[in-house]
Amino acid sequence: GGRDSPAKVRSRKGVCVALSRLSDPGLDVSLATEDTLRVLSLLAAHGLADPVDAARSSSVSAGRDVVERHGSDDAVLSKLMPFLEGVLRTGKAEGEKAPGGVAAADARKTGAVILLGSAALHLADDYEKINGAVDMLLGALVTPSEVVQYSIATCLSKLMGRGRIPERKETMIAGLLEKCFAGKSLAVRRGAAYGLSAAVHGGGYSALRTCGVVDDLEEALASPPAAWQKKEGALFAVELLSVRLGLLLEPYVLRLLPSLLRAFSDGNNHVRAAAGDTAGVIMARLSTHGVRLVLPAILGAFDDPSWRTKAASIYMLGSMSRCAPKQLGSCLPRVVPRLVEATADTHPKVKAASEDALATISGAVRNPEISGMLNVFFAALKDPAGGTRTALEGLLATEFVHAIDPPGLALLMPILIRGLKDRSALNKRYAALITGNMCSMIDDPVRDFGPYLGVLLPGLKAAVVDPIPDVRTTASKCLGSLTRGLGQEALLDLRPWLMETLQSETGSSVERSGAAQALTELLIASGGNVVEVVMREEILPLRTHQKAVTREGVMWMLTFLPGSLGQAFSPLIPVALPALVSG
Image (cartoon, rainbow, N blue to C red; front, side, top):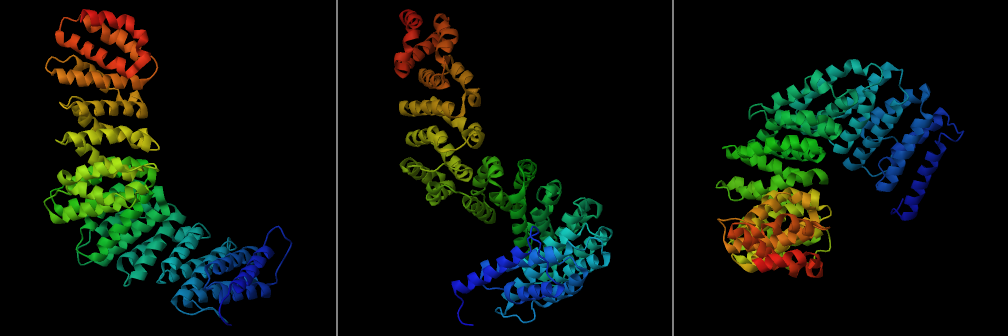
């Protein structure tokens, strides 16, 4: 009696550890039937619903070990199974002293399910008892507790291959689907979805096809508005199948996607909430290949003229924030620009959905410096004309101690792209300066930053030939930094473009000057003897070219290169001087 204390908790945990030790297969210890049942009865009464988490976990572990080691005798099983059935049904045990209430009953039921799973290991050849155990578990699925239902499903999955249960698989799955769709209460529909996921997982995922599970789910999701419970139950089933099967469900996700998108725009709140939960679970478990399969379909729905379908696809894009980090990094370069585009949509609900989705993705940002600037970023994304300068200045003033992660980078890139295209020379210079430093702030620049090059380069190319000298200089240095950070292989098309601009007859002298400055930075950043080889073999031979603009390009190269190379320019002096004299 009295208040619980650390000493009492330690004593209870110590007893449980001792019981687990007595059940060690390495020790030659045996318990009589009466003693085994007495121990399990005591644990059910006092331990399985212990108010202290650590003590309750120790009790469950001890009970599991006792059943696995000492529960194989028929004499034990014949009394243990009805006892556990009673605990599962009522949540009570004879002689209990643990606090009452719903939480205690649920905890005791959860413990009973785990003990039942251990007892099932001893029922390999007893078809009748295995059937009884499965029926007991199926009946207990109506318990209105997620923890209990999850534990039951885990135990049920282990029994699906035992005895004659495989023969019951088809009828069992059909019955669970029926309860998913037509169950009168939330607990019944949710419990049936847990049972369905366990039956498919334990009985073989081919049941999705052979038992028509996916067909039935598609049909249920297409039900009329009045049958919202049926649609909610089907979404529960998809969600929990994804939890239990993981990658094995991927081949069917693309097929279920249109139904899931429709559910997002359903008229019933419960269906929409279930769709959101389901999408989050599916996205969290997609492989890189799965993301590649699903993303085009979602982006395709984004272009649908119906605002409801567009909003649904936006919700799905926002759900991608739950993808694993690797998958998230691969999809965000395509996702965030579309969401930013949707913030300017004329329909208020599409606009609100896109802002919510961006906020959801921002929740995945782990970089503390970026997290501290999210409000500034959102202001710039919603109002580029008014917020871009503030965001760029904030980034320049921030000292980054931690690497920028893919979600943070995805929110940052639209601001840099906008800055490079801005009319303001200052914004262009700031954006180029930040872009040039980006590779040093990312753990894996090739993987995380590389996908954005295609949309960044047009702005950088325009900045290289900008009329303002400071913009050209900053953009040129940026291209050099990117070459060092990503490798010249990532920018293979850039050198030919610069060479072409350097000799362009249609371009101005300013543009040729910018191209020469950028080419200088690019060649130096490429390392090794690249500068000398390119100068000797490609550029200096052009000093005798018949076109004046081409010869001018050579002069511009010889204007920038010595200052940038310093002493390293010495080997080129003998071949550069004749070009200067003749020029």
